[in-house]
Image (cartoon, rainbow, N blue to C red; front, top):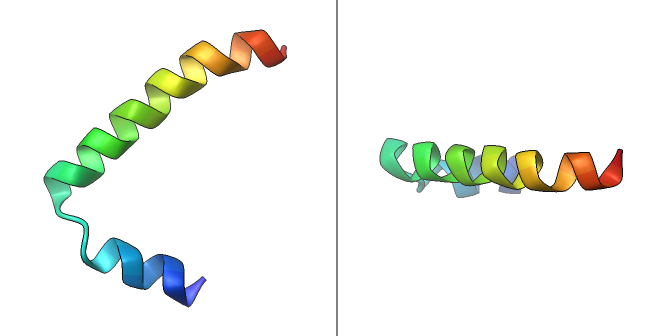
Length: 35
């Protein structure tokens, strides 16, 4: 878990927004397929 936190220490807020947006998009695409 420490490595996870260290990785995110180098991620800028803009990257974080981009990552979360990508994750939400992926969930929207993948979750209906799993359900």
